[in-house]
Structures are given as C-alpha cells and as structure tokens.
Amino acid sequence: MSSLTRRSTLGLGICSLWSEAARAELLIEAKKRDLPMSTIFKGEARFQSIMKKAAGENWRDLAIGDRIVKFARELHGLPYENFTLEIDDHIESPSVNLEGLDCWTFFEQSLGMARMVAIEKDRYTPEDLLKQIEFTRYRGGTCGGNYLERIHYLAEWFFENDARGTCRHLTKELPGAERIHDRRISEMTILWEHYRYLKNNPDLREPMKVSEDRVAAMPVYHIPKAKVAAVEPKLQNGDVIGIATKHDGGYCSHVGLIVRTDDGVARFMHASRNYRKVVIDKSISGYLNDFSSHAGMIVGRPLEVDQTITDKEVYKANLQSLIG
Image 1 (tube, helix red, strand yellow):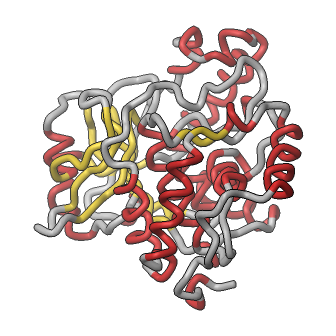
Image 2 (cartoon, rainbow, N blue to C red):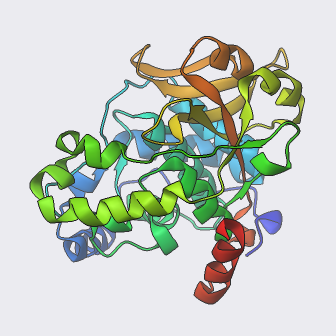
C-alpha cells in the first residue's frame, strides 16, 4: 500500500505483550539464522515504547525524512558502542541494538523504523524491523548468513540503496561535487584483528580484499567541506550524510543524519565516539570544519517505501547504471 494512503493510527495493542504464537514465530525466524533473538535483537522494551509513541502521534503520516528524525530523536543520548554489527564469530545475521549504537547502526535503525511503520500493520514486532535492516544492510537486500554479503563500506551503501529505491544518492547532483580519485580501500583487510568474523575466519580475508578493490573502482563523489555551507540550504530532515575522509583505507570515516532544528540550522546528528553517545551536533559545515581529516560529505535522501524496488533484474540494471 502506498505510504500516501496510510491510516492515521498504528492500531491498538501495538504496545501489548506479544502472544505466544508471535513469540514462537520470532523464535522460528531466529532459528533459521542459527542465532538466538537475544543476540540479534537488543532493546525490546525500548522498541515497544517507541512504537507506542509513534502510534499515538501518528508518525506514519509524516514525510519519510521527518519520520526518520522522529525515530532518531528517540535514540538521542543513547550510549556509543563500537562494533555493534560484529555479533558472532561465524554466522552473519541482520541485527538491531537499541541499547548501544555506533554511527552505522544509529542511522540505519532510524531509517529502518521509519520505513517499517510506513507498512500498515496493527502491531510491529522486532522481526519487522530486522527485515528492514536486512533489506538496506546487505548487498541485494538479502542475508544468507555469509559475512561477505554485508555492505561493509558506506560508499557502497549509497549505490546499493539507490539501486533498490530506498535512498537516492544525491551527491553528484549537488553544486561543487567532485569525484574522489585513486583511493585505496583496505581498512578491513589491514585491521582484520578488530573484526570478529575476519579474525575467526581467515579464509574471508582474501575475498574481502576482492570486495575492497571493487569498491575502490566505484565512482564516488563528495562535496568538499569548503563548499558544504553553500549546499546546506538544500539539505533536508533525515538526509543520510557520509563523512568523506582525506585518508586511504575507505571513502568515509563516519555517518549520521541531518536534523533541522527550530533555528533552521541543518545539524549533524550522529552516534559520536568523542561524546560517547548519540548527539545533535553543530551545523554539518561546522562539524566538518572541526576535523582536519574530514574532506567533505556524501549525501543520500531516503525514499518512501512505495518506491522500493524488489525486482532483482531491475535492481541489477540500476546498480550497473550507477557504478558503470
């Protein structure tokens, strides 16, 4: 159903305890992934509380960007926790952690909840959110338990999700955009000891290098930070902002969301390693100028759920067109 024809309520009973049948269904889904729900979903009480608030305030009726910001604000102040995606030594699975966030899981879970409530249901479960996370986190939108299926570099996330109609990759269209040339992508294979899967599965490191070389060849553009202030008026609530880095290893070093506050400033909201929590920071141009290692920004604009592309052939054709 189109998000433009949404009802104004998420339904009664959204905050009620799950039935035994619903819990059994979740356990069956978890068993398919061979990881328990306690591992792949943390923060059930907070999830239920947020869903109750979303229902009471009719967040489904908001535009996707404003909806994302509503959910993002519910995560404001939560503690920063690094490597939240590394949940097992061997089995890869979609996961949610609403107790501690890193920069990736903060923006991803805000987007996931906003997409989820656009699909009309009487009640939402953790499995509904996990399905949204799976669609945006994994190459082609599906996870079969293989670590290499995950999109590990943010620059690739923008291309992948543009191809599947979840987030329009705007950067190249914005004034002052410049392509990043001759970038060596190597962070994960060099720092493999920091990643549980790569540390415990040495056979993954060589194919990970192949994946990194593929990402290095992608046509990645950014807005240099000296030109970001001029672009700020074009940014909208909920825009996904990748922080482009000057250094080799990856294209981006950080990610967050645009939140326009009451003073009209396009602020950078992110899970901050420095503040050790989710914060609404200064303007995006101000934030970039505070760090010499930041080169600029990459911009994606989330799309309404009814624009999602599920046809695999269309997705593949779109991706090929985007990356050349």
